[in-house]
Length: 84
Length: 110
Image 1 (cartoon, one colour):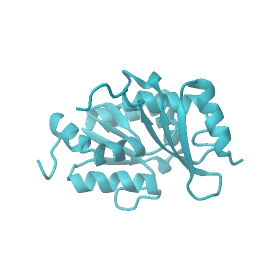
Image 2 (cartoon, chains in turn blue, red):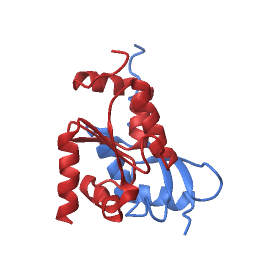
Image 3 (tube, chains in turn blue, brown):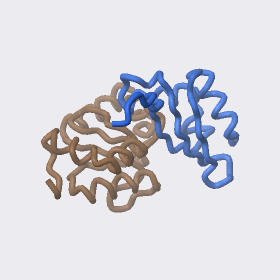
Image 4 (cartoon, chains in turn cyan, green):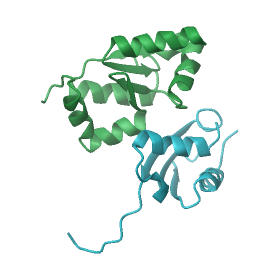
């Protein structure tokens, strides 16, 4: 069963409360999304660990209910105290 | 399941660069697998492609083994490096080429 973009955002935010999720339904079919997830909780983790956190948030729907989620993770931009 | 874990363990022990993928490097059967094949080919990295469509046991086993829900999956020197998104991002930021060089993996444009 297709998942809506807001289902995905809700699940991610439930597990990663400070997450900012920018999601795009790539084909408008509710089955192929891309998401950029930004969270302070990714700090100190490598990309594999960051992506695992998001996949864990989706509780097994990734790869089953959700066919394709192109994922990018990021830390929030540091407050710019200098301009260098 | 231990048999399939043994098979996976020996694949990644015996080959420096192993791509668990849908289809073969010559005939990828999934766009995500195809992208990683193209990136590795562009960099001129030799790799072993393992077709997970050959066996359901392998297709599910690799997900459990890596604790990763999707395919393709790239292993370098026995370590899980990532799936399609991570490999593409590393490639676009030129981290992937550097990573291979640092790990003593031959690339075309050293």
